[in-house]
Image (tube, rainbow, N blue to C red):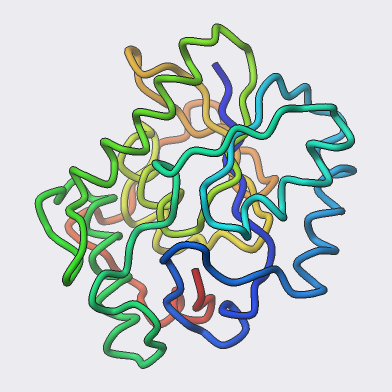
Length: 225
């Protein structure tokens, strides 16, 4: 199965650099709505057999033009929502954003028992995301799209894809409506094919230092979730 993992369009919280992970979340900005509309053309060459979104409104708004163009049912699932900020929710200061990013990047590195302050562990976060992946796999379809969120998509792919490590997802941000394409199955595991349109070479294996998350100053340039 091929999974097309899509980050939502720009929100007002992205503009303000806020840790905005609770339901229902912020709406898309006018730019975010343009980005959502542009997905129709960007993904036009790609067959999509099913479309999943989270319960946060920004993913549903992002998916709406694509769903309308393809005649796809929008399948809303809470389990692919953003990594919860817990006690850090609503903050935008450097200390809070550092703590949030350090935690989800540690999960990408396999440190799943670390808990977001006042929130979930990596183990619990990935378990809920994997439930929806398993549901999609059981449909027996070739290509499924998820419109989800930046932190959870980066953390999950860093952990789950055999050719990626935490260093890659730290150093490579996921822009609004950016896509990650992975192939595989819940049983056989996953391989990343492309990151925001850039194909990863056949046989690519990330060799970045995987001892822990690095590059936080660069990551913070893309604040907002």
